[in-house]
Length: 125
Image (cartoon, rainbow, N blue to C red; front, side, top):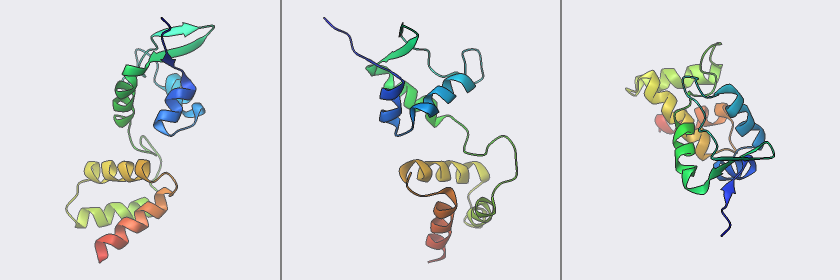
């Protein structure tokens, strides 16, 4: 009986990202790091493969990533305005960033500044 595995392209398609993103995650979050990418179940000619039933584990791993721009640098003007508006609505920074990441994943066709502007406009209604 043939066993089927997800490769980098399969994982990328399931998560709605590019295969480059999956390769980047594997190199940025190796085993032994604080948030290691799930190890593959098999490797065939140097290509990793994960059992399909581990997709939820990989999704949960991705959900545990810090938000965009995390770890340094100054937040964009749109994000700063969004965080101020979120604070007025009673959200702390972590709650506001989780919401922003969720909306960014739900609406990949929108940029972060567009999502920030939409949320702020929605709150002003």
